[in-house]
Length: 216
Image (tube, rainbow, N blue to C red; front, side, top):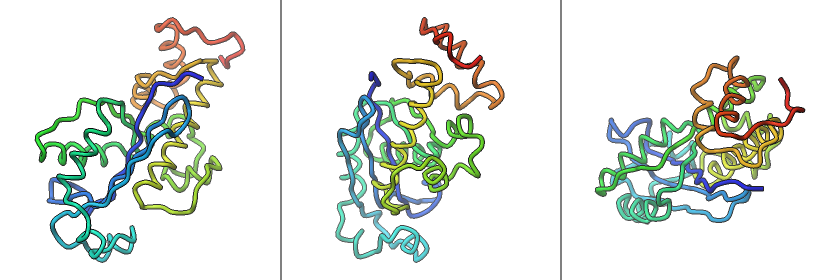
């Protein structure tokens, strides 16, 4: 099975937006190649200020842990080197992408990696799901989980399995050897009712004709 490498990432943060001074307190990521997780990255980081009781209760990450952790700049330098220019995936990419870009800017780096969102993709591919929160999709699709949520590496691993479930669905439905990252990105911008028509047009335009047995 051919599939280009992607990195699936997740941040735990002090709040909702770097525009209001919030910063990451943990990053977790997995590298997927040919349908397998081949590498992992996880690190706590010190945001430089006290985290709230709400964030501690949500994540289990307390102030003692972050005080002992390296600062965000050190961790993000290592993380930027680790991801390189590999395409990125996140569950709610708008959220994680904002924090990634803000932290890279602090260390004089800039993201050139394309990024795809599993929330948006799952809305197109699994419209029957009760909602498109990560925990709900994990249950809906019977994705393996240790039961840990709101820790960066655990969430990245589950999102990685969700990404594989989506690419496997497309591969089987359209008889594809590979699901291009650009296709996954593009379908997130298509109305749900037009997804099938769009994917078929994309495949034909790329010279990857689906088999005659694929659903019309």
